[in-house]
Length: 360
Image (cartoon, rainbow, N blue to C red; front, side, top):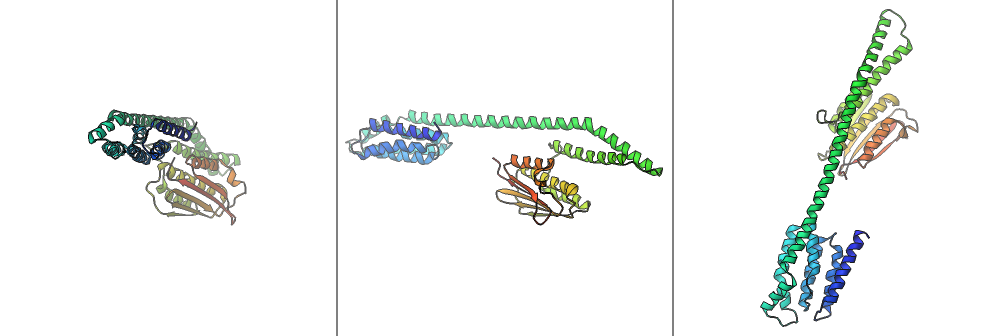
């Protein structure tokens, strides 16, 4: 049974109990009794409204001459306190205690003021009211502690992941960087000596030298990504201009446009936007043979839009292949965003990412 059905079942049970136990002097009293129980079905979604409704209905059926305890109001006090509305619960309880005697005085029964106050004390014992409020507050605090424990667990998992990432970075540095550097250095020295002696440089040696250079660049980029910690703060939107400037230095006509500004963009969103631009410019330099690149970043109220267009060459399958594109999709999907990467109808390639700024 889901929560909604359970709430309706409890409400119907309370309503039936009140009607069976009630002895109002007029038929409308039964209506007030039943209604005071049925409104409890909304106690989770609208606790304050339920508190007000059960209070008014309690006064109404007390005024008809019913001497049934205001059980529905106690349920509402519990639910409102559980929802965290302490002040409203206290104010409503005090108001109910002070107005119930007046409702008893206007009832069809012949009561003196003393009898009305005495009957009210029997109908709604303060101890029961305090117990209902205390139960709601205790459960609310227990739920808050459970949520805090879950958040702490997630933070610990993230810390372990960060530590593992740094461990991988150190292992890569120790095992690969030195070896690749030695290979690259020896190849460059061999090429230099061959040219100095006027000998023809073998193609294999040139390929080794170029591969060593490329491997060094890739390894540095990987280590930078893995070392995204406090000592090496992650990149954000403000660092995109540096990417564009480096792209211009290679001869690419790269231009950046930024619209709007939102200082509340989460760091994870900014870091992902930076990586999208970085990977897009890298792909353009390696594969697109493009002359121009346009980077557009748009701050919107609910999302950050990142778009990179180029005028190079792109095959129809380009948007579905490549480790770089796969990494971009994984980053964007992890943030609940969307990514489109495909050739443009007018030629070239476009990468468009929409990143929500409000994280779940």
